[in-house]
Image (tube, rainbow, N blue to C red; front, side, top):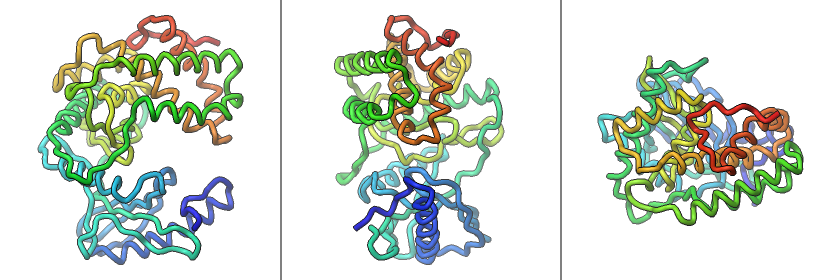
Length: 337
């Protein structure tokens, strides 16, 4: 059986999207929806479509790759169902099919594995365009604090399975980077990355692990996965949710922000949840960790090479500050070259 997701060439990508649309239309027949329009959104770890209805608003249909098993997908939906019970949060939530199933396996062309499909309630809002206002940035910190706070009270069912975003995952991702690093790194740059990876793993090995600093996190809470209604942020796309340090979740967002904005996110977060003493050093570790993981993910795609090269004057500057033991998170760091 061939994997449903194959898009390593333009031809395979076109073939995949043609299969996917047939799967989406087949899946729609299993929901009690008077849908009017299906709109392709994107292809990544999932293939997503916006479903517009005449009576009950909009929905998000997802076709899942084999990266996560059926139990992991169902576990994501269980977490979202629990989070939506909070009056402080508004997150996507799964929709049951006509037979009460939340994760469908839909048939496709002969020879391909049947992909899993889920339907989610659409969270209304707009993605940020341009620079975020100070109030938006602060409110994102508040939202993240509430998200982590509510997740601590979630009691996972016996069959709950989600990934862990820690040292083992980082080591696996870093191994994937080695064959491609010459596309955007000099020998000196690669040595910096290797030294940083070693230091990150050393710090993770001795980092304290408690209910206060570790638990269920979003795992990919950058601005592309946040929508806004005026200044109010709402998190979307929990496909990478799993177990990890809360500071790791925060670091992924701070990568996109300037030092002043990073401080405002932290202030907003601490209005809900107090951070541990000395958190800045741990947060800087996760900042570099998340940044390197991003490059591990994108390095194999030649379409990303130009952007990766452009970013190195900043990325390697952060890595050098980290290796020297200098605090950099709330400071303006000059690019290296």
